[in-house]
Length: 205
Length: 262
Image 1 (spheres, rainbow over the protein chains, first blue to last red):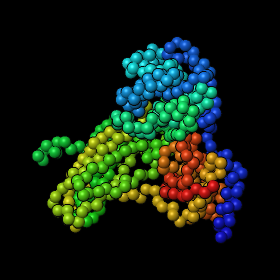
Image 2: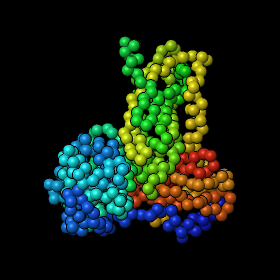
Image 3: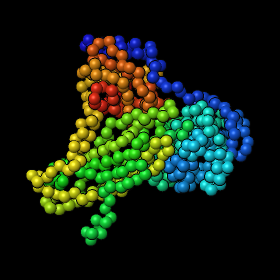
Image 4: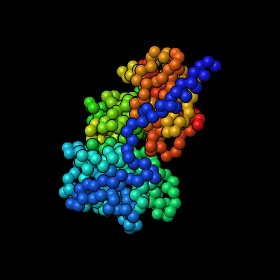
């Protein structure tokens, strides 16, 4: 009995100082405004998130050589999602936060070649070699996906789908969280799965 | 047929930056008894593969076992993972070498002198700075033999060592867990408080709990500890139980599974 009381007392102390262990959280949270950025794109333009107010925006962290990214592009599932989204007027921003010399790093030419060879449909491919946008969004993996609504709020963040496999090619049966978030969001419905655990290679900051 | 089968059998695979082997603890298996088999992965310096919850990045290592009809393997035992820190993020996995063991039970009516084919299909992601896909399809024959004649293989010691370091039960720790805002406050009693060192919690399910290092346990009387374990911002729902492995309590790691109250 004495011990029980002690545990309760300690817990009470802990409640008062519960902030301790949380690591620096990224600025992105569901229902909160997605942080604005300005970055060079492979198109040669400078892109700001604020340019797309009033539109649905998808952000996709990319590392063209990451096996999980390769799986999603070689199976065609990422391009299919991009095409599907583009037909609905969704802005698709791929971001490469790989530092120079690290896996998946590309310059504008490299990015454009990759997009062409993969048949990707992206609105812009952002070059983030310093990892500024990556850290701002707390991007952990490639892929790591964010869906932003026309009001500029994040409505989904996490994995591309529910199938965290290294190289198995079957992506057709997976539950695609990005399509789902866009479909529900555009229909004015709440996004059922607003967060999921992103899987893939670590972002090569 | 036998020579053809032998050609197709691969018991050791060299994949980029690691070697994967299908191994057995003993030279044979006896009818009605159980024996340990496993997949051993030895990695190049600095390379790692992932636990069932890979942490902030990575992919869970997957092993599928195939045995003849009527034969079964028990749940694979995941060795205690390490925290792998990079760029402010933490992954959970293994480096150097790791043995994923499982137990196989030989049917009582298995014929002495017969052999069975055991296969393991493994798929994983291996990373250092870059990441590469890994997969191996391994198989070996296991002889069914008389119990008295069975001897340990050269791997027996490694099976023993791996078993010794598997997470242990924390059933008598009087654990309780409460949710306070976005943090789970886990309290309990450890039999030897002096042994509590740098603590870490490895949540079993990906994306439910934060992966960071834990603050020191706070104690007001010998044996009692309290930990704050933040819920991950990626958790898709509020957890109703806290399940995973705690390390930092002396030499061993401990499995916990505690319902969360509000």
